[in-house]
Length: 227
View 1 (cartoon, one colour):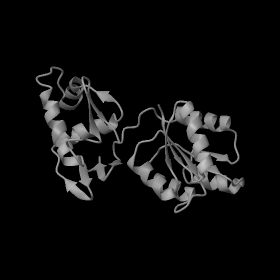
View 2 (cartoon, helix red, strand yellow; view 1 turned 30 degrees about the vertical axis):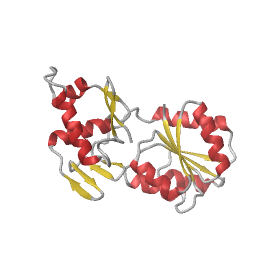
View 3 (cartoon, helix red, strand yellow; view 1 turned 60 degrees about the horizontal axis):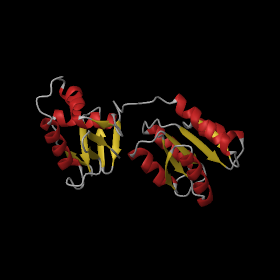
């Protein structure tokens, strides 16, 4: 199911949009101010953002601009009570993909959102960029991982495994596939190899390695990265 971040401060509109989008098969997360929306959009993976312009703490124009400066390419549908052409032009020039003026028909919003998702790549690996989850920052260009700003020492294999998990986040991946894709051999000398490296990653990255939040075990199937 496509995962949508709705950044909106009107409680009634939040409820209406969330209910309708979930009925249409979307997973909806919400933020009620611009700073919280920006933070979630940077740290988490979404298929699209529905972003109001008039927000407390940080307006939608600034959120859009700052996300694009951070190389976050998630499709953005901007909402505003304003109807002036200049406002639409500003939003689009800052990096928004589409624009909808309040009040709007729900069917039009759904159609525009579907169009954005069709145009967006189905899978965009974060190669050459940074990826954030919790207090972890992964820099793919430098092959570095930081936790709370401090460098985390990972082996080359651990980093490659983490990168593979992130690039396939949300997918359940078998140990055999991980051996093929990360270790590079078709035979399976021991799936314990995968388990050991996963345990090391959890120890270095999870707040509580015994109860992981990000690198999850899918019993009988393999592992899944979730943020």
